[in-house]
Image (cartoon, rainbow, N blue to C red; front, top):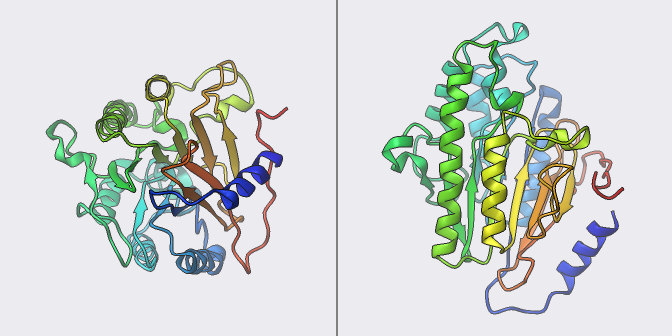
Length: 324
């Protein structure tokens, strides 16, 4: 927690800069159940009070044990559109990959993936009351179906979503068609990530941030090695981060606990990558957000901190797994 305190202290002590600072908010794994809707509304109200440049929802709008429904999806859309500023969404596994489970009625994940794309990504713009234009992967004929992968920039900083989800990123041989879907989407994700870095280099961006749902690093806490559902993407991402050298921020959901790793290791056996910071959002019963101060003139660029929501129970803030 000492590192978190120093980040917050540094954020308040920065001198004025020519390039304007701004903030953005990130949330994930919410509302995640009917009982959490009042707390989720308080999250939205607090974010609206803070007036960030934009908010990103990193997926898992429901629990994996709850069956999907069209009514629920439209209820979520209404919630997304109650954000005063732009709301950018990247899907989670609970919205589509996990609907094959028995408690979800053994439904077809690809049917629900198509529904997610059609409802939330119908246009080249964000959701929210003040939408902003987005560039999506649909502009590339080879990857036209991947309308959910989007990119935008604020203050010269590049931001992008990557449709990378839990449940092994849908690399599930026991589910018909899953491995084929995973293989195609993984190739699209790698291409989109590389395109975002290329855009950042071309525009001389001071930093770049990526948002996705999966805790692709979850095996770091148990053993070395990268899960096959994420390995190729992480190998390519680490290579790009090392080449870019400027600050890279990785924001994801999945495990429902706030984590902040500066100088992130892509797995436990790897060396830290000094220019990479990884942040995990709160979620499920911990209905809070992440607020990131972006200062394009700062060498660090991204200064993340918890956004604790009045009226919602305080969460536990764990130490980094790499601090011991």
